[in-house]
Amino acid sequence: MNLGLSHMHTDHDLPIKSTALSFDILETVHDLDGATLPEIADYFSKPKSTVHDHLKTLVNIGYLVQDGRTYRVSIKFLNLGGRARIKSPLFQVAEREIQQLADDMGEHANLMVEENGLGIFLYKVKGSQSVNLDTYEGMEVYLHTTAMGKAILAEFSEERRDQIIDQYGLPAVTENTITDRDQLDEELRMIRDRGYAVDNEERVEGVRCVAAPIMSGSDVVGAVSISAPRSRMSGKKFEDDIPTEVLSTVNVIEVNIQHR
Image (cartoon, rainbow, N blue to C red; front, side):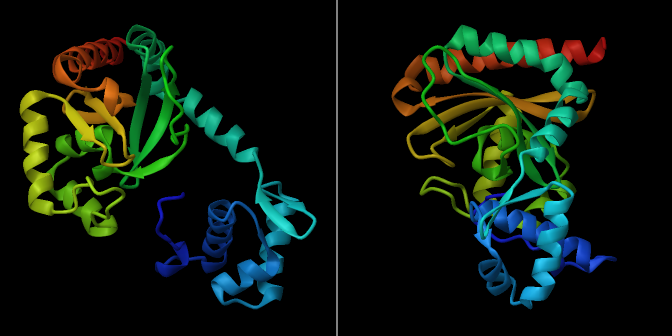
C-alpha cells in the first residue's frame, strides 16, 4: 500500500502481533522500493535480531527476495492477486466490457472495487490514445480522491461512509482533493442525482475522470471509469459523451451480473 501515509497493523489490538509485524515489514519494504536490515530495524525501532528473523522467514517462504544487503518484495504476490482477480465474479462479467470501453473511447478504462475502506484498481485497459498514468492493477487509493471511489462512496450507507472517513480521514493528494466533509457530502448527493461522478484533478494533476457505480440489486459492487488528460476531457465530451458511454457500459455489466 503506497498511499503516502503509514498504516501499521501493529498499531491495532490484534491477537498475534508477530504476524502483524511481518506484514508491516512487507509493506514497508514495498513502500521504500527495497530496504536493508538496518534501515528496517531503525524504521520500526526494533532490535536487528528481531527484524532479521522476520526477514529471513519472509525470504524462506518466498514473499521477499534478498539481493545482497537489500530486501525486496517478491512477485509471488502477483500470482496471489492474479488468481484472486480471475475468481472475482465482477471481473468475470466486466472484463470484456472494460476492454470495449477503452477501444471505443481511446482512453484508459478502469474497474475499481472497495476493500477495507480503500479503492483497489481491479482492472485497467489502455486505449489507442492513452497516456502513461501512475495507476496499476492492485493499486490502493483513498476513495474520496477518485471518481470511481466517490461513485462507490455515494452508494454506501451513511454509517459505512462515516466508518471509512473516521478511519482514513480526507487527506489531500492534490490541491483539488476534497478535504471538507460537508463539501464531500454535497458532491455525493450530486453523484446520486445524476448517476455518475467526476474527478477534476483530485488525485493526479492534469488528469480528469468520469465514473459510475456498478450495482447488484441495492448493493454497490464496484465502479467503472474513463481517465484522460484534462486537455481531452472538456466541453461536451467531458459533460455528455463520456458519461453516456460509461453509464452504458455499467448498464451492460449490471445486466450480466443479474444473469450469471
